[in-house]
Image (cartoon, rainbow, N blue to C red; front, top):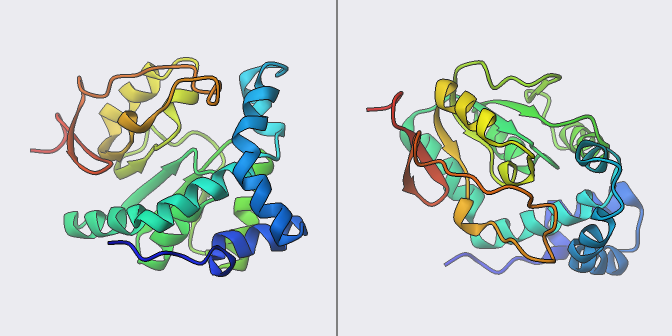
Length: 218
C-alpha cells in the first residue's frame, strides 16, 4: 500500500510554491479547481497549440496530477519496471513539469525530455536546475524518429488532433511505451481530451501503464 503523503513536504508542491510565489493555501486550492478553469478557458482558445503554449494553469494542473501519482506509487513502479527490463534510453514525450524525467535521472537512466515551448516547459527547466537534473537531455524538436527503449507518452495522445501518426512513429521506434488509455476521461471537465486512440494494432499491454511493441520485442 502506498504511504499517505504530506503535500506540504512533497517536492512537487514545494517547487510550485517556490516558483509561483503564491501562498501555500492558495496554491493548494488552485490545484484543486484548476481542471475546471482549464475546461472553461478551452472554448476561448485561439488554437490547440497556442492554448498549451500560453496557459500557465498546467503548472498547477500537472502538479495536482503528479501528486496523485506520487501518492499511488505509480511513477516509482514505472521506474522499477524499466529497471527490470534493463532499459537505458528513455524519452518523456510531452513531459510537462518533468517529474518523471527527474526520477529517471536520479535512477541513472539516459533520459530525454521533450515538450512544446511553453510556460509549462519553462517551469520544468527551472525544476531541473533546482533539483540537480543537469544530466536530463532537453530535446528542442520532436525526437520520436530516434530509437528508444521506452517512451513515456502518458496523458498526451488524447490532447492531439491527430494521434495516429504519432502512434505509428512510436511503433517504428519504441520498444516499450508508458500510456494510460483506460484512464482517459471524456466529459465536460476534460474538454481538452479531443481524440480517442487505439494502441492495440502495434502494442500489447503488459502491466500497469507499460505496453510492449509487438514488432520490436519478442
